[in-house]
Amino acid sequence: MSIHVIGVVALVLVFIVGTLRPVSIGALSLVATFLIGTLVASESVDDLLAGFPADLFVLLVGVTYLFGLASVNGTIEWIIDRAVWLFGDRPALVPWLVFVFSAVPTTAGALGPAGVAMLAPLCLRLGDRYAIDRRMSALMVMHGSCLGNFSPLNGLAIIVQKAAGAGGVQVSSAALFFGNAAYNIVLAVVIYLCFGGRTLLRERHMRVATASATIAAGVGARAEGGAAATATGGSGDVPGSTAGAQTSNERSGSARPAALRTDQAITLLVMLGVGVGALVFDIEIGFLALVAAVALHAVFPKRFDRADKKIVWSVVLLICGVTTLVAAMERYGTIAAVGDGIAGIGVPLLTAFLLCLVGAVTSAFGSSAGLLGVLIPLAVPFLVQGQVGATAMIVALAISATVVDSTPFSSVGALTLANAPEPERPSLFRTMLGWGIAMAVTAPVLTWLVFVLPSVP
Image 1: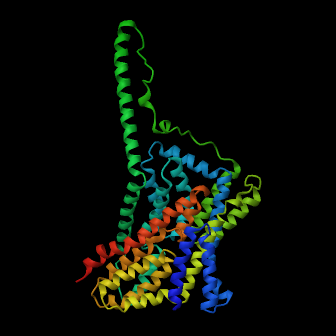
Image 2 (image 1 turned 60 degrees about the vertical axis):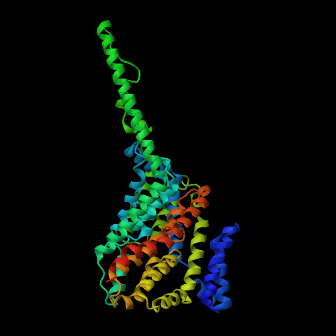
Image 3 (image 1 turned 90 degrees about the vertical axis):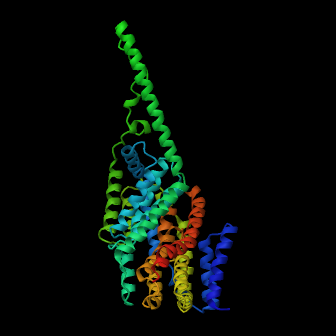
């Protein structure tokens, strides 16, 4: 049996067993990597561990450690209290604020994991405060981040342009950015409608109607009281006559946040410093967050008692295990073999669709940037023939390979999952996995229909 078939079968079995039995999918993936590598590929242990994502390990540990400290000493709660105080009684808008906030870092040039690492803990907690479905908050964070993936300032756009340019194919930067942005905005609308947005809008309308009725009743009561006061000399005041004067913040019950303690102020400054270092100066955020967390814990040990328990080791094992197995499959040439087979079909439209499908399915478990660097050169030979629009094909492939970052196995998805409370993590994992599978199935079809098919001469 071919090693490529064995690898694919092993990956499928890992997910079946991990779903039916209470065994970590990450641990199963590491076992599968060891068995295939030693028994089939004759690799040494050092070779097997070459695919272990050390950078992702440090990222998950460092970021969850830092934000665990900020949660233990109350800094996160202070930030959320401040946000609630500013936003007031507008829960229907909060998911869109989360979406827009998450899009800013990637649009400005930051890679997705860096932006999500800083914003996911805050955005998810903000959603919790407004009783918004955690699934909506999580998906809005991830797809907001995806919106800016192909900004001309973003590294992913540069990778795509270089890979296409090396084969003599020119790609429109505007079409790449706006096509991807539009796709993720449509997904955000779907997420909003499917995960509680309509309920938020109905509740908002009910509150507005109730407030209007209260004000009208107060005006009527004051009018009647005024007539009585004219006759009796009274003031005409009635209970509830000031209901219309309440501010949105008063209706939401949010008071101005208390002042920060010294340790909280320093924690906030450190978090801002980590954000600036990662997003502006492009310093590795995993190590930066880890250094900051260790320093804070050493300076304020009593304020951060047992905060290191906040590191989400279960998610670290899950993501690192799956990534190691997929990296082994890439090392054995499984992805390249599938791509070469597709590229040799000779039917441009079918080739375009299958490349998008391979990009979506594979990227759901691996690096989007690395996969685009592999698949775009495979697409170049038939793109230069002019039977399919080059820009349209690249846009479709780019969207298909990145929109699946909402799976829990991508770095963006892993960071989002890691910031969910432990009791809710299994449920959110299932939702993210189901949504990711839906993206892997629908994105190749929709992008083929919307971008590739109309581009055929």
